[in-house]
Length: 72
Image (cartoon, one colour):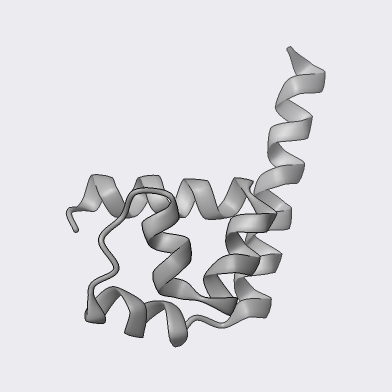
């Protein structure tokens, strides 16, 4: 997966709680469900993610998006 693909996946993860949940429950199915090839390396990287850190990052991202909407 190239850098643009990784950035797009991260953006989806940050903005989609059900995708995040699915990713931790079944990485292969979640990735394939949003059109990504579930390579062994990518699945290993996901399995090694710290779920709490990802959730904290996602909450900050969502709060920033809410602030942007209010400012607009």
